Image (cartoon, rainbow, N blue to C red; front, side):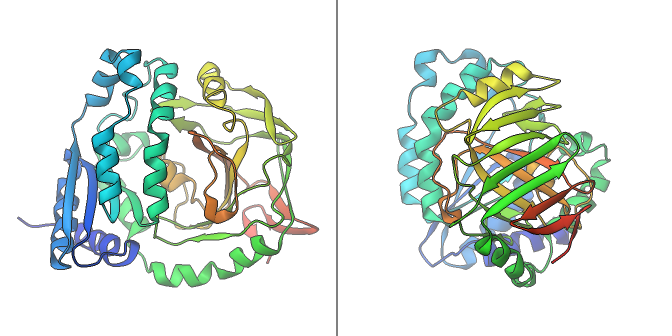
Length: 355
């Protein structure tokens, strides 16, 4: 079988650059059946390293079946077998390959929130291993969301992933230093004036070790410092539910008012998920100027050069954040018609860096 050389190259990047794989390691490869060609190339590479691939393949439609038929008692059952596997593996590669990105649109959000709470300890096991990466495989569903043909979306996706990530890692040094030294961030744009502290927090470079594609730097805001309001530019999608026209108002770090033009009830349900869901866990700066358009896939969209994103909920501890939550929901603000400041310096104006 002839394999698209771009698939082979992406598999090489994931196994030779993104992950650390040693002889004897068990590496989980989680994917949908649509991504089998990439999964097979990844498995070949893992075998060549003397390690052991563990393929976990999901079936289209099962998530909807699960949430439609599982009782509350069943939703609250912790997956002990998955916990055992998470403790046994040395690393993981997650490949998104959705055939229907709106599969859970009509599922009760309380069910999704309940299950997310149960699964939270499992996600923490993976995060602590610090040896994982997620990517997206081009499918017709993703192409449709992006208003592209499949061929156009494949060109878009592979051009975003198949890059020199070691060089990108070096390029991000100055942006990390900017966050490391900074104390206060202010974001200014139409319907937005938001401030928060990053004092004592560490900037984290993102150059292909956790996300593919990548291209951002981030840190964790000081939890109780956020003040003001922000209206997000693009729809925020979570658990297959699209929420559009989001405006959040913050006081003493917490969201005190949340409105949306579409799916406002779902937005507020997620913010009530737990005590940490109404606080910011991440401030990220998009640095990938090769990704120029919003395609309804957060893995790509949060990297758009000239944007920033703020995540409600869980903070990644390496960035200095302390917020705990089962929620981590990135929302994007396009600053190509705005600006942000760190301390007394305008760092970016109309999407262009001034440093």
